[in-house]
Length: 329
Image 1 (spheres, rainbow, N blue to C red):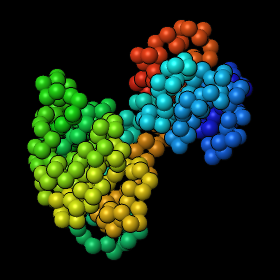
Image 2: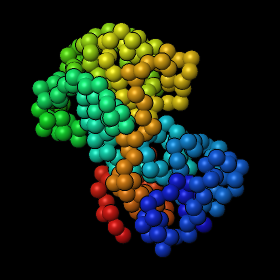
Image 3: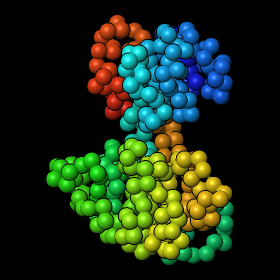
């Protein structure tokens, strides 16, 4: 076996790999740690779902492993240092989901501004007529300048929205702000001036609880929030208070951590908090892009001489292709 798939690619990409390598498809092993350890012993590459964590111990069970691939973004479930030490390439379709996530955020903002649309879509034919708002002329706060924000900014600008933004890692004088038609402001200014806030910050442990009572105290009453960042960027108690007292009229967050609004938590009874199960990246097109990206990088990793593939691992451990690979073999 060359490649072990615990997460399936699109059929065309799987067939392309199977024509070039020995591929075994075993998604059930994601929930079978013992079976996975046995299956990995002869694998040279493996495609993993989010819930399977790569640790040093994990790598020790796969002495032949050259590459670990994922269809999603985020490395908190992968020990990158251990992978570098073992010269195991970490492959991610980093930007395959940029467009789909941007469209999710746009859809979320539109739905939160026009909440009267949701009830008829859900089957309520005699829903109450609710007064909505328009994106045109509204002030939209862009919190985080990840690639998704670049695409979203183009969409919002074309709809006539005024964009302001903040990113703790991007200086306010950076040319990127002007290119995206976003006015850089401080975080308090963003929260105080925005009719809606879109959150797509890159998560790091230092940003846990970043959006806390101190920040949310600046909320412009009645604003709405949409986000694809990890829910850990929110202080859940602070968010619950802001949703309860009207500072935030409604929020829609994608892919919140387990337990974020479970029974017994302050957010459990917030009927103006809408959580979706990682729908942002879940489109046919993004899966096609991600599958072909992963398939090509796996083939490259297993076909090239080991030294030439891994010499750049310390500085570039992840696949950072723009996701625009051909959608065919």
